[in-house]
Image (tube, rainbow over the protein chains, first blue to last red):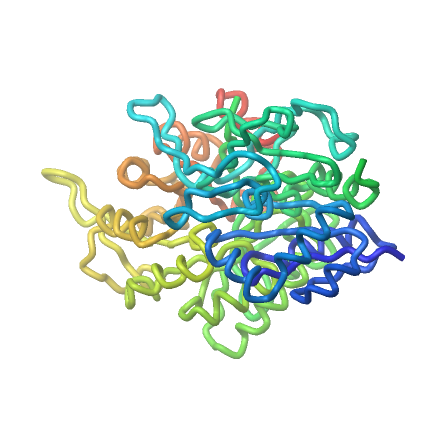
Length: 211
Length: 256
């Protein structure tokens, strides 16, 4: 039986993530954990996270999870969600500037409301928006291109290499809502809160061998 | 093609049971909030709000159990309001599986609570609920914030308050017109428009929905990012799917 570690950084709604994964992976052991060794032993790793990036990274350092996450990235399928995606970039503008894990080149920027736009463009970007599948990927299997997922965020990832982007969404700008490289897949939206299409994506992750 | 306007059914929960009539076909127990939430989820609700109207603190634990059970079955955002007064209350609901909490009276009695909550848990999970009543028509309309279910005036201007709460780190405003709540006469559109224009964060319009045109007006005329309704869905008059189809026909983007 495979073990799926949902890493607990002390922020966000972990119960939603673990419940949704249990729902699609009935034969797996889903572990919500803050123990670096448990992360190392897992067959797959999910990095969820909401809230402020600074406290997320502080939790990672305080608990020695940073090295375990880097090891997982070198070894097993990893799914980043929201902050778990943003953390993959080199830098974030949040909290006056934070260094990220640097797995994906680029930085995390804040949405800026345009002046005089016809739409009001509230921030946070909150609700159901479309994801354009810009590249084929096993995690998109069975999910219609342009499906809506639930978003809630004020910052977005801006990778410098278009090859890292597998999905984009329009809100003020066209931003990367899904990125992938090797055994990493990461999304800005919340698959655990995105109804059937979100569960489909989580199901694809649970079956993915990382190629 | 962009962000969809949201439809949010709201359930009033007292001591772990849904109150107000819920009249679904083929539902085993209309009082079970989890079953009702599941039904709305099947209909395509964009989020679900549970409003805890329990008076006693003993029953707050019951609400956490409701959220926990719902979060295991319904994979859309869940908001919990009612009795959220301390960081510990927020933690308990988020740990149970809520995605957002809605703060009302506690924000008025201690405004810095919203900033603390936002710093601690992130703006994305902090909704500030504002109950507003019109107190002037001429020369310019004005609305005042009320607490305790619309019984207690606060002397605070509702538009100023919405701005202040957004500045304090609220991620969203749940705006209820106490003049319209329960009337089925439609939203207070002037109030909704004033608040939507005043704040940079999303606004959920609430109070007064009696038909599907009211939902469309809240979005098109009020400028709301989301609309919340209870009775039109509870009594089985309309499904969430029918509401979305109606909005889509009027050119409103919905997640259908």
